[in-house]
Structure formats: structure tokens, C-alpha cells
Length: 296
Image: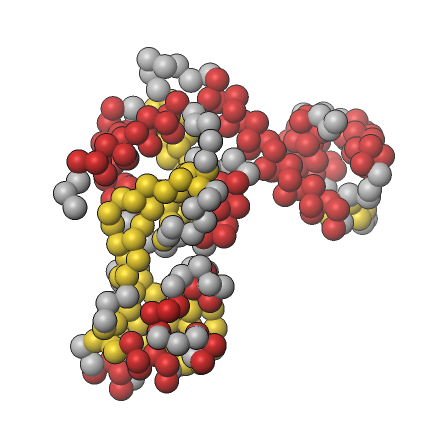
């Protein structure tokens, strides 16, 4: 079994790309650190570094260990932190994974009230698409996800927060389509479109379009909308995205809603049979209370 101390040493070298610099940050001698890493390579039976004159580069096996070591140490740190929490003075982190959604405003409002009651609790947001969020959830690296859904009901619990995201089309301000107040869904089939990666991979209901999405002219995909806005500005395609995510002010961009309305509900997603830290459990209960009290 690999000692956690060695994983921290290994990550320091991966970060600094130099034994001498890493040893200085760890406050140990260079010779000791070098021997520890050679012992680690011997234990694993793999070469972890390509040793150059001035720089250490991770091998493919080293890159794999770096990613796993980060996850292992974060999980250990989170676990230790949960045990050290004072029940009378709640502290710690609430880790939420989320995609791009204006429903984050709703979560922020609830956390703001929660934070007044528990000022020592911090929120840590991990942004990414649905696949990234679910992967972190599966590995125990986040407490919950805020996602469009539901996606895989047999594996996760879903709390419908009664918020919805509305889709529309992002386009160049000077294009002919921008003169319309809304875009008819049938028009999408004739346009070069840029779709969210989770839409393209089938996580969203492409039945909206009334046909197999393969008949559409998909010229690109994205996982976060910001970079895709530049493709739109330069006429590469029209981006199907959520309302209120892109600030079009001062840019060659316009956003138009689609009719009939394309919208999806938002859910707080947790793993079934998951054990929560005290802070995460209390916050999740507060979310549930908000949902129960909200008018439908």
C-alpha cells in the first residue's frame, strides 16, 4: 500500500517539475526525496518520471498516478475534516458540482441564508458538464451536483428544485435571423449549429427537434458556452444555449428564444446510499425544506 506521505511528495515533484524545488517546499533534503521516489517507482514497478537535465516530466503512468493521487488525498482531507467538525459550531466545506445554469442563483440565495447561520462553512464549486460532475460525484469528490435531468435514476437520487432553464439560439447580431423576435424550432434544422457536448452525446432530449439530430448540421460542440461565443461571433454557427448565460452587451451577439419553448428542469443530484458530512447534510436538508415550501 502506498503511504499518503509519498503521494504528497510525488505531487510536489509533479507540480514543481524539479527535485530540488520540490524538496525545498517539503522541507526535506533532495537526496531523501530522490530515494523516496525511486522506492515508489520500485514499489509500483513503473517509471513515473522522465529525468532531464533541468526538468522532470511525468510518464504516462506518472500522469495517471498524479490524477489518482489528487483524488485520493482530497477524499482523505475531506474525511478528516468531517471528523474534526464541531457540532456546536458547524464548519467545513460543501462541495457542489454544476454545469452552466442560472439556477445557481437559487442555490446561492439559499446558501447565503445558510452561511449567516453557519459562517464557518465554506462552499466549493466545481464547474463542468454533466459527465464531469457525475464522475466527481461517483468518486466522492463532491457532495452533490446541480444538473439538468434526471439522467440515471437507478444510480442517483434527484431533488427537483422547481427551477428551469430555457434554451435559445445565440447568433451574430448582424445576421438575418437576429431581426426575428423568436426562432421557430423548425429553423434549427436548416442552420449550422453548435451544441452543448452533453446535448450532442444524448444526455438531453433531442426529440425536441422532431427528428433524429443526425439530420442537423452540427458544426461544433462545447462543454462551457463562453469559448463557443467567439465561434458564433465569427459566423461559424449558431449556438444552442441557455438563456441569461451570455452577456451580449458590446459584442456582435444576439440571443433569441425558441418557439415552442425548449426548457429543462434542474435537479440536485446525490449518490444513492451516500454518507454526507454534517455540513453537507444540514445544507441538503435546508434545500429540501425550501423545495417543500415553494409554491408549485
